[in-house]
Amino acid sequence: MMKRGLLLCVCQGTCPSFHKMDIFEVLNSLRREGIFDWVGLHPQLCSDDGDKYLKELLRGAEIDQLYVAGCDPTMQKKMYRDAFEAVGFPKEKHIGVEIRNMDTQQAIEAIKKAVEEHK
Image (cartoon, rainbow, N blue to C red; front, side, top):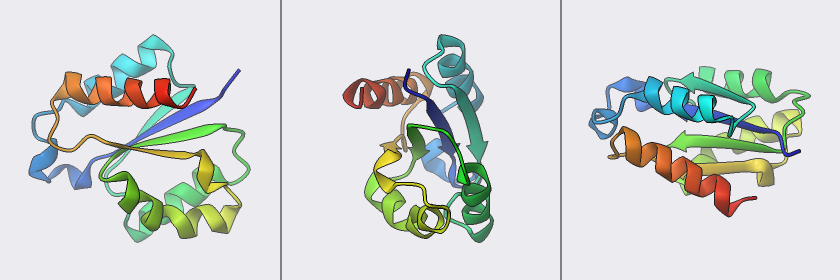
């Protein structure tokens, strides 16, 4: 059975591109459906403390796929590279999902679509 985790990163919650979305409903909806083994929220993973958070979370983590829903997936790969390398987390296990400027239901659907594409 594939183990999946989901992190929602919300640009500090102040970025206008997240204002149409109920982030807690996104997390709860996906959690209730059992699509992910765990879900989490971080205000800004690209910050220094975001790096620390990723390192702590992923050090020795037994997880097959880490989905990060937030900004552009290409930017995510660059921003999280050091944290992944520091703890030996294979970057191929990271799947970025763009959810900026979406409402709650659009974000849920975008994340579900990403899971379907990576089964």
